[in-house]
Image 1 (tube, helix red, strand yellow):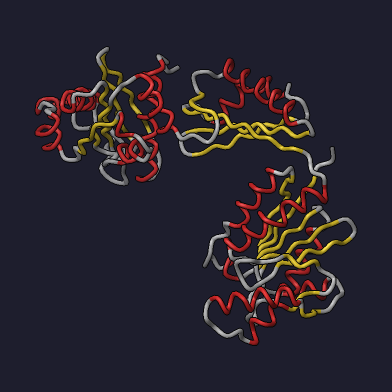
Image 2 (image 1 turned 45 degrees about the vertical axis):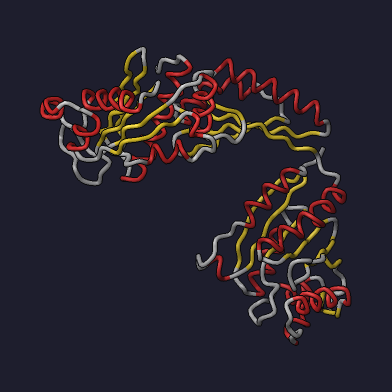
Length: 419
């Protein structure tokens, strides 16, 4: 089945100036994929007729569907409707149902309809109007040589309602699109390049209608398997079979399936094993506890935290020995070991974890440069420690450290030994 391709064109100087962020395109891409339409390109253009026309001409050489947002307001800088009327060699004409909708919106607000807003009910005569039940700017659907052009408001909630109610169903019916199904496998603790090496033979053996994407993010890589075809149940079976192969190939690095965060997966492990957790944080300054408690229901397993940023707090609140700090320093295996073991005792939890390091940008030394970080995990069976070396900025060092601790918890609870 032939792929159906779309291009998204966003119109507005405010996007190019960075005054607003284009969230519309990401949402549209997600929704189009659900109905079997692939986004080929996303283009942002200024409020210039020539620029808009150039973008339209270029888009129709690549895509079957051109979706346009922005430039439909009542002011002089909103040019989209006029440019489209000229582009499709038609004229603007009053569309009575749209006028009724605009009038009703103003009446509901207790305001009189202005002449400017009345102009929004004038639409290109050759278009199919797309009703806007939430705003004053109707959308427009054009067809030309098998291509579909749809112009919608840039206001996100108006565009989303229009897409959901009208545009997406009509596009699916018009193009008889294939089914597209995704399965996501979450990995942690392995760089993208090494992961790709491990999966090379498997990836090369995938059928042509199944595609793999590597989506690296902070501390991990999402593997997205995408299947395209006409038989949903068959695609589901094929994708699941490939996911099962991944479980055999990289079992130590997979922590979840679907859109699940590492802290959520760790929380599920703690709950399923009936275990409790406490944290002792120095260089992460509470960020680790924040990640853990961002998960709904974390009170079932998380007891509390000590942010022992100063050495005096390490000794007074966590009973880290003064001689340990004097002999080894705050950033050391000995110190972080005592922090993890003692916070476990303090909160009477099954597990205690700890962080201590030099987040930067200052504070480093030749033997302990910025990015030197120790983490520890303690339970009834003993204590595991790990030395990290991050060459990031301060905030990234903190974030990477928190993720490393979460992964250390995951590895400890699942019996994994790091390579």
